Image 1 (spheres, rainbow, N blue to C red):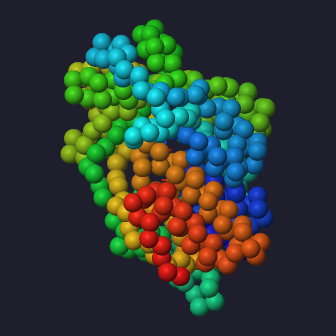
Image 2 (tube, rainbow, N blue to C red):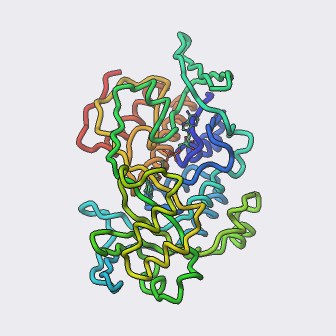
Amino acid sequence: MRVVVIGAGLGGLTLAHGLRRAGIDVAVYERDGARGRPQGVSLHIDDRGTAALRACLPPAHAAMAEATMGGPRDRTLTLSDELTVVDTRPSDGVAGRARPGRQAHRPLLRAVLLTDLDDVVRFGTEFTRFEQRSDGTVRVWFADGGTDTADVLVGADGIGSAVRRRYLPDVRVVDTGRRMIMGATPVRTVVDTGLPGLIGDSPAAAQVRGTTMALAVLRFTQQPVLARQEWLPALRSHVVADAEDYVMWALPSTRERLGSPVMAWHQAQDLAADLHPTLRLIVAEAWPDVTAALRIGMIPPMPAWPASPVTVIGDAIHLAPGFGGNLAMRDAQSLCQELVAANRGRLDLLDAIGAYEDTMRRNSFPSVTAKAGR
Ligand SMILES: Cc1cc2nc3c(=O)[nH]c(=O)nc-3n(C[C@H](O)[C@H](O)[C@H](O)COP(=O)(O)OP(=O)(O)OC[C@H]3O[C@@H](n4cnc5c(N)ncnc54)[C@H](O)[C@@H]3O)c2cc1C
């Protein structure tokens, strides 16, 4: 079996590892160059993401990822405008609350996922279209004129997915108009304020003059340089040596207010202008090059479709700004499991893809339970 994956994000790379470990021929095509784009600094990884990493990655990769995450996060704090803790809620996944988990440094997780996939990932290659052929295979075209042919095409190409637009043109992405400016500030520059000590490993929401600023401290449980020596010496990325503990912060904005996304760091200074001096300092000391403005979109539930050799995972088909990475990795784990069963002759290929899609729709759009006829 040969699988072509479009997109080297969290979902596509998790899937590529899982397929390769099962002996399936896989190629990943990524539009961006190897350094990628700023996509936010950290991710809350819950049980779904951790389970997928353990299931799909080689054990050393999964160990490296987990060794460098922050401490356990099992509660969320609310801070007053004087920055004292006024409320503590459990992170238990109940009633819309986040599930417990740990914080991961996004660029480091990406570097771990890319390790040992040099012969699988082709950067700077933008997917443009595909054609399902009468022999059951799928032909894929790229912007540079290149092509590839596979038994399965997986769109793991994120919110603007070109695979989804061609395959499921009725699925809509709604821009909510909301934007989130996310940044990171070295702990050493703000440690004297006492805030990093106050919130510990817990996510916190500071509600100040109509703005809710999200804050969290990522203290690497094991320093990345030491973790690399112990778990994954093959990991080559400047991210490892550069990594230091930081305060992650996020400020809400809107499409109208934001202007140009390249001005995200300056925008953040404006948004923080009226906040508590400690919060202003956190924003002022942030690394400008990792400050990013992220669009908050949503995809309404869609009716089921008949399975074919083309499918989609992650943000390409469902959006969840606070936990979409976990869903993308869980999709990868679930699709991998079904494709491995098909490759071993235990399932028909289309039944395998259909089973993945039923699970994905059930988990991501619980109100839609209808199955597609195949
Ligand atoms: C403000 C904010 C905060 C978030 N916080 C969290 C969090 O704490 N925890 C969490 O789990 N999730 C979080 N998310 C969601 C998370 O970032 C996404 O759900 C996750 O990145 C989706 O992974 P993916 O693999 O589906 O897509 P992506 O990671 O977006 O990867 C898609 C890849 O496809 C590539 N691509 C696109 N088009 C093409 C093409 N035509 N050809 C080739 N390649 C292409 C892109 O360059 C990209 O590399 C957050 C999101 C936002 C907006």
